[in-house]
Length: 380
Image (cartoon, rainbow, N blue to C red; front, top):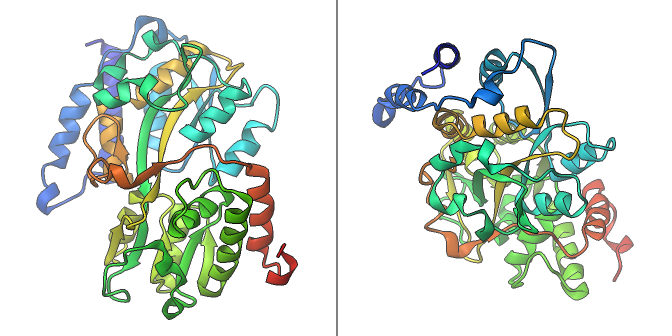
């Protein structure tokens, strides 16, 4: 192993230890040892990427909270002698806005779900990937290595994104206030929980999960009649709402401080982990009608300033140690080890998010719903 890589591993180990990421007990008593083993498996970085000179190169990363923690970023900066600027987003709409804030996009790499990757690829905003520069793909589970089998990642024979993490978007509930396990997202509308419900502030996902709850077979392609019914249902949901949220930490704080009973879990297992760490006895369920699910991937933007460095970042994100940190800290599944929350077992009831029939219409309607427009002002 190269001396530079050895120092990199030691730096990351020290930062993990200081962060307390592996302070655990009981069934997790061995996780510190697992971390060391995982870090020991770090592969040597290719000579081309590792030979970056000590200069003022900057890698601009657009990502979701928890995907690029400070210690992980600092270890990458130290090894490649670069500065990493991370910008976090809290919704697909915010991601879209950031990507369109300049042309070409003012970022080098981004994390986005498969539906968004398809939009960016269609608009020619992404760079085809050189898979030879991402050797850590060999660590991924076989189904995540087969990019052609995952909708939206390939186009004209080129790969545009690499899977990183995923989760179902189920129903989170307080076991003390909801003694019987819910079987449907329709429980969010139960008058018993008025003022006790949290919902994610997003047009696309709200229309989709409500469509599933109403029994529509394709939540991403709604007919005008279905769209009208879903709109009315979302207006009705406002009666039960405590608040809308955007970030997982915000949702956890609201849930704890205001004793919420139910929540649409946009971030899935990440939110469950946060709430349980906060001492809340929560349950998590995939409704009988099924649940949405997302697969977030890393991609490189068209016009990235340093393609070698951008590929090195994606390769770094596939290190076993990084996957272990993602799962341990965020409660999210990684693409290197089997899912800890049984997502694969529930696969037949999961609807992996896809581009929707008319995102502009959904966003226009959602803006009015979220802002509190009166029901009679909507089309009959």
